[in-house]
Image (tube, rainbow, N blue to C red; front, side, top):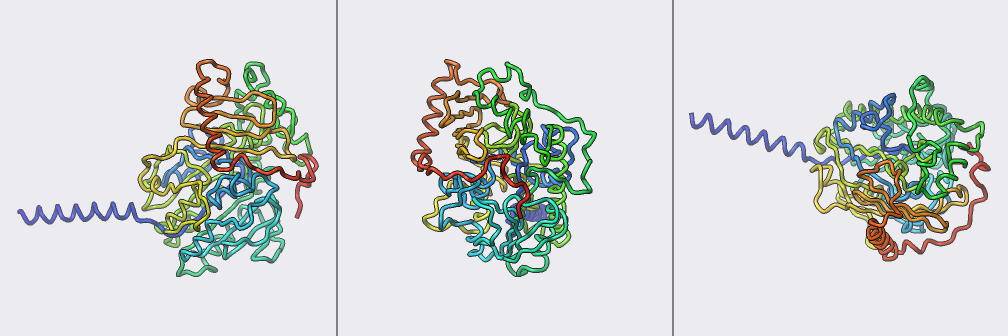
Length: 490
């Protein structure tokens, strides 16, 4: 009787230990899927998602993995954000402060350090950091890219240094190349890192043929703050209302060009249909990993490079420090590592991506390379972390090409956000995100908030000054402004 009870207890303990060991086993392979301009709440499972939207791939990732519900970028613009992902640095440090300026010479990318740890690495998609080049970059063994923003159909691709026109839809093609590389081309004895960098869902929005018209009859929600009424602009900076009549405003969007969407309904419909191609890509990647027995040994992270305004405050696009612009979708999937259905509430930033992947691989950036981010791998493993940041800073630098958004500095805590505008004679902003999540009531002039404003402003500029963030150089402007640019250059 004693022996039977002892054996039963022993088996129970061993099974429990095995379960814990399985749950905590760290994968080695890494797949990073990045989309363009995908806002944080346009995922079907998200509580604030529009009712019509369907994203089964993202829903699956969240159900089987973790939704990082408070993911942000430190600059809401393509080149700066993408460079921050690769370097773990704020834009003022890596130098790609806008879509025209390149990173500082000699800047290191985390995939280079993955190679040093024995990884084989591949890049598939949109590069677009500081210039229109599609040339292969250091840190990648396999290279598939295109110039600038690229096109949705039949792109000109640079495949390992050779350019060729390829028939097909860009989201499908990039997924094809990535899976083919993982399956056939890479060294099967090495762990791999695959970076799938989608063009979608950047304007102009062209969905795959199979998705075209999917949401033609959808009821499109409009934000309350979009209405051009005095109560919506009471306390707002003047530039916000003025921008609604500009390239990135709801009343003169894209200057009514025929090659761009003409109404917000049209933008949201085509944007959402284009997103379906990205969602299909996610599904294909997860299905492939499970079919080939790679799921238990692979971490998949999905993220957007920045958010996107869809009518909030009368604006479209990004750049601003409002939530819809600086907040991004992020989901992590790693069977055996991440507890299914986890929601992570910590503030995770684009500068944390590289440190996390290097933490998983057992590597680090080289000595002398300042890393502003930190690994969130412990959060993925445990669901939370002690002593994690609750405040971070944000910068956007004025662009000649899109001059309607001023240079913007911000500091965001768990409850309050302070926004400071540089180089424009206008009103700054303070929002209580707990009572005013849609940022419709500016508290900047409220007497009881003046100490808070002074403290947040000091904290922000103390950080910027200590890190050289106030020394961004004056830049030669590009040769075009918004409506002068060629839409589909090859």
